[in-house]
Length: 109
Image 1 (cartoon, rainbow, N blue to C red):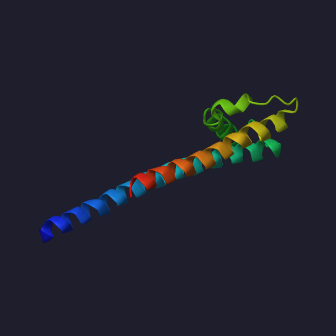
Image 2: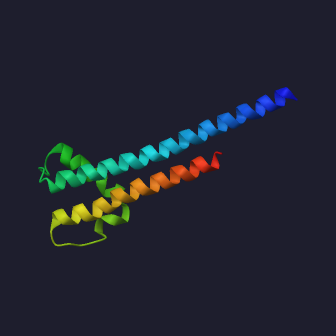
Image 3: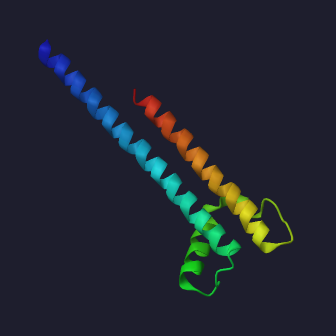
């Protein structure tokens, strides 16, 4: 009987650990997407050279990460366009990844 109790405790601890890792991965993916979008916004608003490899790398990666937000608003100023749309996308990734990580952790309890 004692062995069964120990076994269920260790399986519960293992499950909690796996769920914690999954939640952490989701959170880190959201933070990484947010970081890419914020760097793209800063480089654009700061007038970084678009032909530079770093600037073009972040622009190329930010486009798919921005999902449907990249043309949500259409201000005439291109810098304002990037600031608003990619900024909203960054907030989306930050909030959604946080909420999803909490939900995953809750299922692990």
